[in-house]
Each structure stands twice: as structure tokens, then as C-alpha cells.
Length: 352
Ligand code: DP6
Image (cartoon, rainbow, N blue to C red; front, side, top):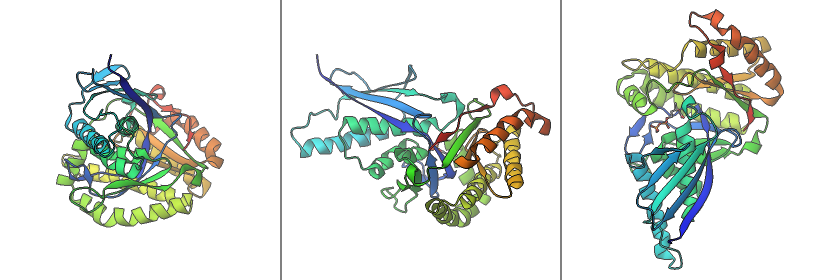
């Protein structure tokens, strides 16, 4: 019976505070702008993946939460090809290593959060796949290097290879060799930062990110202004706000960037709508909270869907979460959209 080699690893969810939206090269998955994200606590949201390989396996295979998925998609093919060729280089340079690079792989993944809830599951999924195969292949743990492979699986996945506060540097090279993730600061740098996820809807998103951003790049006039004028300045300022632990600045930039991203979606032709009336009411509520406090104590951000992520500092947790719980019920009174509290789940807040 041929030996089975295996390794297990996890991939966390990350939520962008400066959004990646737009590709300059679809095949290499190169972005049109730098982005920044915060990686959420692995205990709460993560993908757990075991990668195994053996001479006896007949084909590459993937299971997610017990269901079979294909690894024959262009992105997965590319990711596995890159990982195999790194292993092959190691095998050539070190004769002692077992020759496993061409064995078929079996990947078994489990998400500890609802996959359907649109909570960046592809980022956590690809990050877990890459780190488990990298472990199986005993590749050097240079996460920026591995992030270039993760990027080809799903752009935002490259940021999930690091904890804490992470930047994805868009790079300039045509071959994408300088388009990689780096850590701005680890989670201990700003231990009072917290995030809460408000699940407004667990339906699959209307327009998938990849096609949504392609449409925006092609049709939005506002988009050029965003990538050329807005993001470069914001990227520097947001990094500074993180390094200085300046929540006022961080919150302002985070909310403005969420607004800017959803504006270019609306400016696409035909327009893309990710926010629903409940999302908009959450925005109003956070603004009211901040106004009442006389300073910014909470910041909202929305990805390609209606669910909100709220960043706040620990000292304001009771107030922010208390108000969210209190007013969530009343949100439907603010709009014509029927709001069903049963669909609006506030995940407990997690330390990052
Ligand atoms: C709005 O990383 O899912 O969440 O590279 O096509 O897989 P692909 O897109 P994906 O896009 C994420 C978009 C976003 C913003 C962000 O995470 O930066």
C-alpha cells in the first residue's frame, strides 16, 4: 500500500478596509490598486484544510464541507501547478526528499462559518489550501512569496496568509512578481481593535466579484478617479492610521472607502447594487452613533454583498453592540424594505 503524505493548516477570513476592485491582468490576477485588510480571529472564522497526496490517488480532488468540488478550474489548476513546481525544485536540489510533486492531491476543507453567508469564503479557502499544500511539500514559509500564488486563486486570498493588518501591494511588473501581500502590523500591535459581522442576508451575491469588477473597469468613469487619485493617497493614510493606532482616522478612511467602492459599482453600466435597504440603515445607524458620541467610535464596511462588518475599539464594545442589537429590530421602520430580524444575525465580536 503506497504511503499517504498529509498536512493540515488553516486559512482565516480577511475584511478589506481599502478595497481591491479591478484587475489589470485577469489571468495573473493583478489588481488595479493597492488594498488593505484586517485578518479576523481564526477561532471564529476560518477554513481548516488537510492536503494529502499519494501515488495511489487517481486524480486531484477537493471536498468542502463534505461536498465534492472540481480542482479543474483555471485558477485551481494554476495554483496547484505553481505549488508543484516549487516542490519539484526542492526535490531536484535535495535528493533525499521523497518525490511527491507529481502525485495527485486530495484536499479536504471545512469552514467553521456559513459558506453561503458571503463572508470572504474564497479568501480563507485558498489561503488554507495554499498553506496546507506548502506544509505538505515542506516549502519555505515565506508568506509574501506564497501570497503570489494565493493571489492567482482569488485576489483577496493573498492577504489571508498574514494575521493582523495586511497590505496587498499591486506591483508594477507585467509578470506579477511584485504583486504580493505584506504585513503592516501584527494583531498584538492594536489589541483593542474589534470587529463584528452583521449578516443581513445569507443569499449568494447577485454579481460575483470577478465579473463585477470587470464590468466596473470597462464602464465606470468614476473608477479612473478612484484608482488614480483616491486610493494612492488613502493607502498611505490608512497605513499611517494603523501604525499610529489612530481609530478616528482609520474609521473615517474605512467608511469612505466602502462608500467609494459602492459608488463605482453604481457607476458601472449596467449598475451593480450590493447594498440593500438594511445595509443602508446600518450605515445610518453607525453615523448616528458616531454623531451622538461626538467622535468616531464605530466604522462600517461592506464587501460585494449586503452584510456589514463593523470595526470598533474594545472600550466601546458594550455601547456599539448594545445599540446595534437595540436598533436592529427597528430598522424596518426606517425604510419600506421589510426587514426580518431573523435574517440579521450579529456574530459575536472577535478580537482580531
Ligand atoms: C469587495 O478576491 O473575491 O471583497 O480576485 O476575482 O477572486 P477575485 O476577487 P475577490 O474580490 C474581493 C473584492 C472585495 C474587496 C476586497 O476584499 O479587497
